[in-house]
Image (tube, rainbow, N blue to C red; front, top):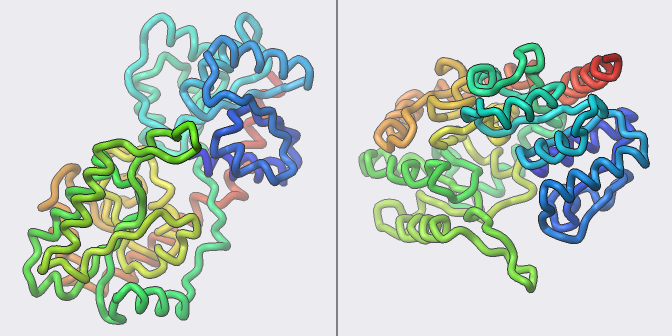
Amino acid sequence: MEIYTAELIQKLAEAGVNQRVFCSAHSRVAEELRHTKVELITFPEKKLSKLKAASLIRKISREHGITHLHSHTRIDMWTCVLSRWASAHPKHIYNLYMNALPKKDLVHRWLFSKVDALCSSSEWVLSEARKNFPIAPEKLRLMRYGRKTEEYHTNPKQREQLRLKMGLGKSDLVFGTLCRIDAGKGVRELVEALDYLSDEEIQKIHMVIVGDPTILGRTSEGHLTYESQSIELADWITKKASEPRLKGHLHRVPFQKNFIPYIDILDVFILASYNETYSLSVLDSMLMEKPVIGTDAGGTSEQVGRNERGFLTEPRNAKSLSEALRYYIQNPDQVPLQGVKARQWTLTQHSWEQTLTKTLALYNELGRN
């Protein structure tokens, strides 16, 4: 989400919005924006207390004539609210990327009264916010993620070369996912789904898992550390891939910043998360004309539709996932048909032009109030 936030900031800058980005010098946002023309105001600590951050935001707002605050995490929402305290300015927009869990206590009633607009890419998230948050319904705004749609095109030669390098045959059906190696992403169930397939079915397919374990933090020397459950899960996948039955058919690939070629080698994309809010990797795969096997939970159902742009399965259910795999093994003609529908839907919903137009319109609307 930090990468998406940085991309949104850059797109707003290109549209002429004068911005100052307040963040930790150690953050991914700072890393992504450091070599752009966007002005960064960084603090050396990894984290600041809410009160100290709020005090700095208040100071920055006064010094630079800030008219709008745009927060992107729950903690940042708190600090922006505290920085305004008893004032109605600057206006405050909060982008909600996670689930809207019940928050109706007195403190949250005050907090959400100080949010002028709550934006989400997902209709499902907004419906949950309407039900669980003490916020006026008119403040909820559907703001679809913008994607660089022009970058998502297949490269037949590159696809063939990468598939050959990975041992994927031209006629093999290749399933895959791009996600953190994390229990909540349903990676274990995805691999276990292969156990429900016959030997004959396994011989026709490949499963590619692209991603690293969940990052816990960094050591004092700057080295990444990972969550123990994610490390154990990654080791388990490696052992499964060495089993005679799955050897050469289950592939693990580290995180790839240039991820589009790895979507391109797939025929069907999978996101087996227990409850995904609204996945960027699903959108990116759809733009590459890949049907999506997703769990019928959270925003994924909204993205896949009722099996129009893929196949919905039960969360936490390896057998249900295996039935989806089997559907495409038995109906390979559905892969390109659903893939075209997936791209068409994403193009109409998630262009940067549309996202920027709506964001700028919201800024202007709030600026008039």
